[in-house]
Image 1 (tube, helix red, strand yellow):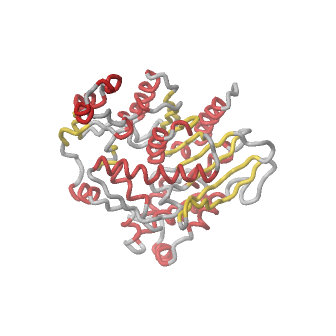
Image 2 (spheres, one colour):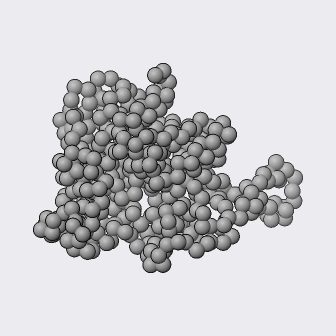
Image 3 (spheres, one colour):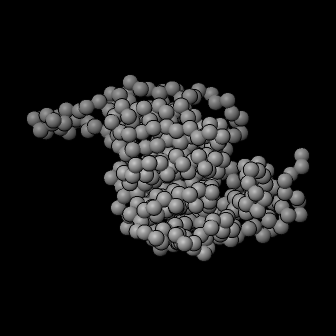
Length: 397
């Protein structure tokens, strides 16, 4: 098998990996307003300090011809970074009244990469603590920036985290735009005890609790927190996956260790993915993205270790979003590619559940696009998103 990256170049990149800062700047330099501003926009990379030694890397785009009254926050997916949206920044930042904030999640990209360590009583507790690891840093960033309410657009795992954030802080979200979000459908290899879940969530006698005796009050169980309650698994079926894969997954081994610790083979493995993923792009952009991805994959492992807490082997959520959206109270758009490997029918069902609860929600399919919808068909993707931005501002199309 002939690898896209020749061995000599692979050795050079292994011995001296591309600087992530330089690689990010190179990808973003394809924009017409960065590093130098154009007639209507300016952009800058920011290191937003959350606490001593902990920062969030942000790429902020501001319009210079009018005041920005709305803020669009953009989050990437697993193993990615904020520069993946470089093909969308130009069109989205052309919409009057909007300021863009593309972020590297904590533990990703050029944000701080602290050691990912959580202590959990069980796998469900681990899910909530892994979510909190990202939610807390995102909320800290919002407070540091002084943003009252935001529109939040996020891809894949970033979409999953955004739902968890919106469940916790619905008052901070104007609209959610979920781009091929991870973790929506239930895991087909888990048998759930729905009856027990419904009993746990049934209305309690809170209205009459004042009439109870002291001993009765002490033995009365309070209603579970709907944001921290989940269907219980009665049984788990055997997964059609190699045993070694399940073994490594459940022991939280990151897939990126194979890039970090295989010598010159690491850059070659990355080139196999980047040469295929970005094949439709001009050569200079493909090369810049390869260097960027290699920098992302070889940097210190951190937030990537959350994935095995949030998802079971096979990439199904341990606590599916489909069981949580009934508590989601913010207008939501679900976007999928026509060739997406994510289950768009699950997004459609989620939107239906939300509408039944009186919350505006719809599911849109972007033609000629896969999981990275925004990269595969940026023109159609941007059209769908700018329509949403107009609705947020109450502007007729």
